[in-house]
Structures are given as structure tokens and as C-alpha cells.
Image (cartoon, rainbow, N blue to C red; front, side, top):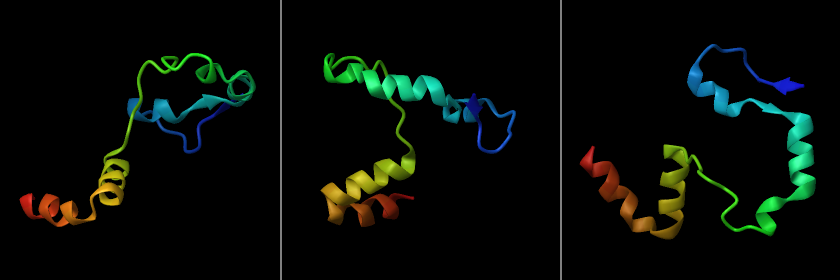
Amino acid sequence: MTHTGIASSNAADTRYTFDSDKLEDLRKRSPWKDDPKWFQSVSVSPTAIVKMVRTEHPSIIPVIYSVY
């Protein structure tokens, strides 16, 4: 069973589709607990990056916004 949320033909949206049965099996196995290099790549949204930076260095956000 594939979950797509909102039907879209956008290629960027394909990263948000998943097979719920495979996901449940993967969570049960938790291979990342045994192999710290299990994840080959990650994607972080620009919004998440700003939130992480804001949490770590609250005074840097006005500097970032003043550049734009």
C-alpha cells in the first residue's frame, strides 16, 4: 500500500511517498542501531535548517535575514 497524501505528478514529491508495510518492517528491524553508517544520505529542508541554527545560535538569525 502506497501513501501519497496529495496526488501530484511532481518528481520532488516522490520522496514523500512510502509503503506503509515496508516502513513498519523497517522500524521493527531498526538496522541503524547496529550500523551507524546505515543512512546513505539525508534531506533537510531549508526551514528545518533555519530552526536548527536558531536553536543553536539565536543571535545569528538577524544576520542571515539582513543579507537577503
